[in-house]
Length: 135
Image (cartoon, rainbow, N blue to C red; front, top):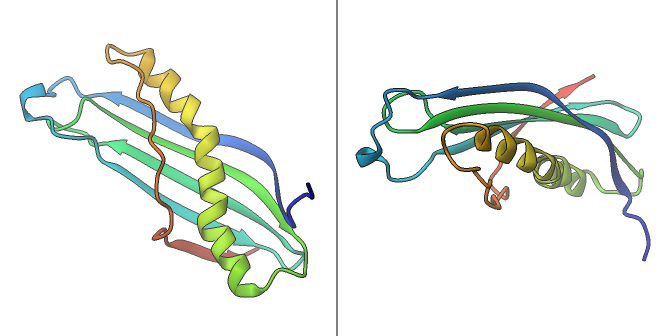
């Protein structure tokens, strides 16, 4: 098996905020909202920093808790990768990979609360929009 021409290194947590909603009313609870945003800081030397921010729940009565976490990782690629393919990899694949590193963080922080561990489900990132900036 060969290594991919698209690689990453150094995923790290840059922000974590967790808040229990004391006013949460479980009879109003239907499902928990999950939202995210991606920023891509791209360089001319076939590298980029991809930053993904995940938001789970809301502050208020409708959600038991609110979590906001941001992780970033360094990505590099072979110059043979076409621009359209590369953009899709940075917009879809990179945040998907970062989410895998966020999953245990979210489970651990929620498990430390009065609520059971929240296991982040698989997310379809195909419609994910990213903000691209040059470094």
